[in-house]
Length: 180
Image 1 (cartoon, rainbow, N blue to C red):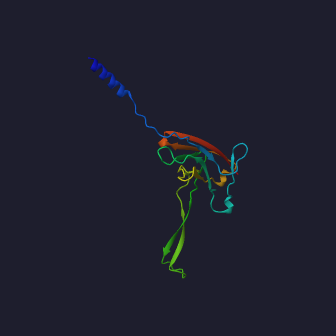
Image 2: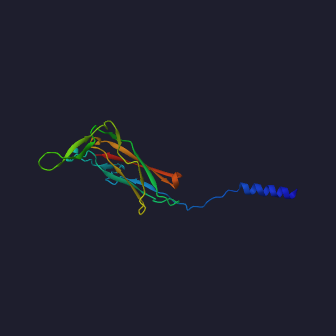
Image 3: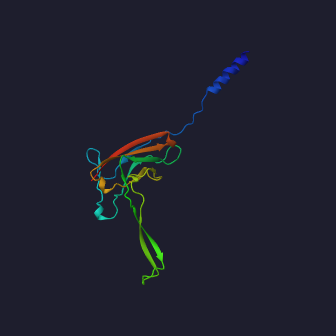
């Protein structure tokens, strides 16, 4: 009987034990930066390109964050970006040039014709890319922003969410940008 009690107590002890895996504890960092002039209130200022200077209505700007580039599993850190602003497409988003053969122009048997790309009117366009991964060599991550001239004078907030250890650890940050 004593052997049976000792066996039962041993079985309970061994089944109640839990194996824990030991991983190095990392102090993850994620600090966003606008990569442009920052005023004393913490707002970044971005000068927008005047559409009169070119056909492109967008101003391209790269912002980012200082980040721990690898987690304890050795996978690169992933960042999800979102902004509280967007813009709408007009009906014509651009033009394409198509080569037309055997055109009797007298100059060449080939000619180029300009065609408008239409049918996208009213589509919303986010001003930031959705996801990026940390640079494997440097503790940094970048994202592109493309506001349009019509946003001049607006203040937007860009939110970043960094995922470490396959989403078990999430760090967030945000920046505010004034378009000038």
